[in-house]
Length: 296
Image 1 (cartoon, rainbow, N blue to C red):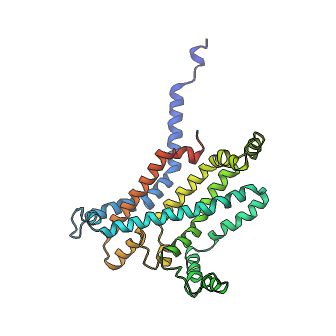
Image 2: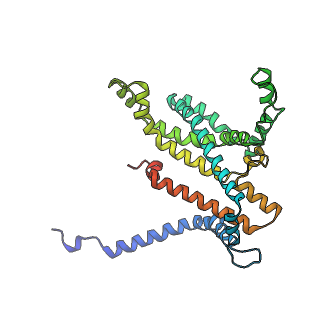
Image 3: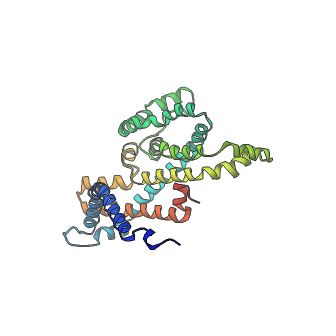
């Protein structure tokens, strides 16, 4: 048995732990203040404005309008529809691309990864207007398609849902490829060889081993793309041409035409709550902590 004098000095340890906690709090204080100033206060101000009526008094007027007028429901439906289709297109294009990159040697994969990261070096507005030039009726894509006989007359590829989805999928694709590529790189290739040695066909080995192991990156990338699309503004506004009304474009229209901060704030609050509900549902149904952090 150890003597009482050999035991650690518990009060001193507790005091040291408190000092460490205060030190960590002091180090985190600038970040906490920055988050409060940049996020918490503006969002709180939006919540406050959304409950102020046109007469300047507390009211549920703006939320009541969103229930009464069907146009608001159509805007939210379009927002979720565009976000969902963009996510599905990114999955269809991004999964094969990420798989191709993961199968390459590390050096060669790094070279090809530059092509995925290249859009980040260009302004979002420049990329959007580049698609506008390519997709318009007298644009390069229509001219090339007519030249090779794909169609006879110019096809309307912009200022509609088609152009919006093309532009958004191009911009969002890297956000899906990067986490998916990271998950695929962690998969041991020996597992596929072992499955083949045990008699599995390439398709069986892929669907029963490789795909489940890559699912964490796929879910994480899909959530990132979907959530970012919910609040997207520039691409739908330019390529949609006012015909694809999402919540962000509707908020801008309300501020420009009516200068009604209350109605615009209410739309922003509902979109924020909808986004949090999506993340909450994903966390509950898909065990988001295990997906993002590899917990089992």
